[in-house]
Image (cartoon, rainbow, N blue to C red):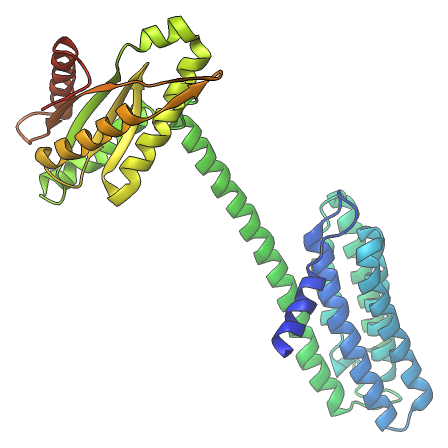
Length: 363
């Protein structure tokens, strides 16, 4: 039950903001920080009350209310205005606490925290960011001039203030660090996905989605050293759709594209099953198959299975059903010749299959 409640709190904190042009990362940072500061000011208020200073505790309770308001504003208001209110709340906390306690009570890091938060707001110019940072530093210098060296204020320098700051300040900087890491990780992941997409587009056939000739040759280039070490076996087959020109001429090029895409789905699924190897659109109605899970005899059995599947496949386009067949030329690669020679031999066997009646695997 506690885990569910904690998860609900996290989901609520990570909830997106209403304005589409605002930074969700900054909003989440402000929310988490305002909750940390609200808890800290509440603890300070309790400590002041325990010391018998009931009226002064109202200062910290008021600040706690301000930080709660800031948390609310991140869902409905402008992020920049919310950041300004957060800045004002942090400054009031530092000024009030330094006045009531002492300079050495350790409230300076709250200013360093708010300075870091300003650099998360990227919708403003660097000049405005530096102006806000400069204003905070100026206030810090004024406080140092007024209170530096004073060891105790009206409320002394109690231990509980040291303990609260010891917990609160690292928590605030952890929130900043987590937000920065999260933002960096998301950006890096987006770039990674974008690069993968570009790589896939560059190496894919735009019609069928299969890898193209260049990509297949790169894959083969990676496989050849493994084969030379005896880690892989490699067989190459070229498949060609029988009488494909008739399909285009009688049913139109749209139907031809439909045949190519449907066959490509079958080929991709077939080759991925049991990790048989790879398939690419080699050009036009030709496809190149690379088998890595056995020798040429194994590849021949697999190709016969695929040829039968293609033959039994019922295609439907524009309300008409029809079937097609394919012819394959297969060659097992050896270290005695290069891969171009193997592909050439597979292509020659494909031609033999075409000349001897089609719809067969020649090995």
